[in-house]
Amino acid sequence: MSTGGWPRCSVAAVAYFPDGSRLATASDDRTIKLWGSRTGDDIFTLRGHTSGVVSLAISRDGRQVVSGSIDCTARIWSAEPSAIEVDQVRRRAAVELVQSLFEAHMLKSDVMTALKSDPTLNGPLRAAALEIAERCGGDAHGLFEASWLKILRPTGTPELILQALHPLESACRLVAADPERQTEYLHALSLALYRAGRSDEALQLVARLSAQPASGAARVLPIDLAVSAMASQKLGRFADARAALDHLRTLVDEAPGSGDQEAMGFLREVESVVHE
Image 1 (tube, rainbow, N blue to C red):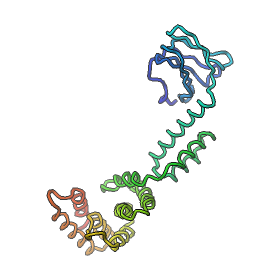
Image 2 (image 1 turned 90 degrees about the vertical axis):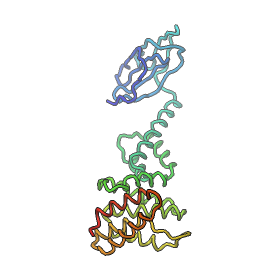
Image 3 (image 1 turned 45 degrees about the vertical axis):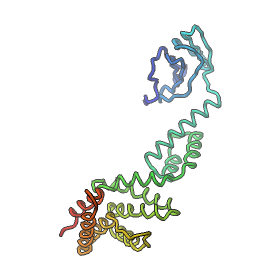
Image 4 (image 1 turned 135 degrees about the vertical axis):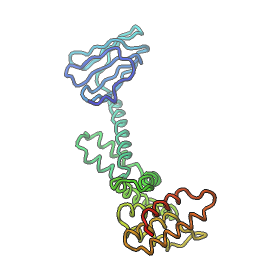
């Protein structure tokens, strides 16, 4: 049984409904809460007492709740929430569900598929969640950042790399109207392709990026040289791999101060892969 929703304040009284499907709790925070007794779901909250609630009773037909409070009053409540309360609870549950799915899947298409295929969702909750998810636009920057963290180091598992590759491809599509951002994301995609064992595609992408007209002074990026060196080594193009390694070393040596830490990290990885 899920206990994530159970009250954390001091509970003074508990009463079960006759059919056992729900229970009510009275608390020192002046509220009466109704819960799903099997799931721990917070169904809705009754508010009106001005002091802590200390006693509860449920009518025999389960339609009413009676409460007593330190404020010296007793109240009779309907045990059924209003249509507005039901909608609010459903909306809150739908928002939380969609947020959790985006955290797990990142891609809108995957979230929509999960909502449509989940057999545990009732019709109204599924409809509310789908409506909320449909309005969520693709967060290209969020997809890029999450993917970059997965592929930057060579220690990622194959499963982790694959989890990064699809969102990164989506991020590149989402910024198609912004060539500068798309180019930045494509450099990262070349590394993701290499890490996923698709060395030939990684080299093709690096070559395509190198052929693009440079804005301002042309600059070779360490990530391109690293991908070129490691992918060439994997494909048996050893001369190309060594040439890219030499170029990367020169780039790191010419960096001002302590150098580019990211570039130095790529150099260490390439030196461990390319055999001279």
